[in-house]
Length: 174
Image (cartoon, rainbow, N blue to C red; front, top):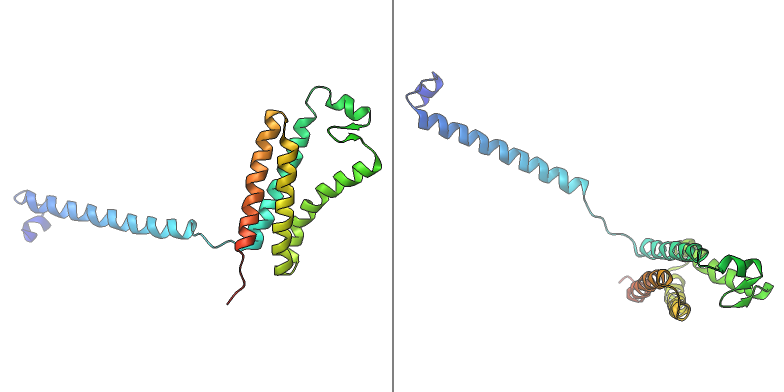
């Protein structure tokens, strides 16, 4: 059969067909192997350090804070109240109220970077304490809030509780 096939003879169609099928199988295997190599190197998943996870969660929480407050400006009457010096639901925008609200926003903003810079034990406890504190703040401030704010609060609470759990599970080496 091999001699007839090499000469291009039509006397062995089965042999030619078998050879063509074998070549096709070899090509498919080669392509599958190269695809597997390509896909494992392109999509290789490396472990993300806990500090980066926590920092990313705080950054995401801050984005939600900012957008929830921004969308809150579109609530009818909100800008008029701001122009009148009122900060709902806190009342008059006194220097003390503004300082308190500024601290409330400055702490998670600073945590984005501090969690990468602080010693491990301090970073761990800062996540647990501030994560729980801000979860409580979000629960309290979302009561009776508009639906868009409740959506943001729910996402923020989920992220805050996730970072509390991650920090609580953060263990010492050895």
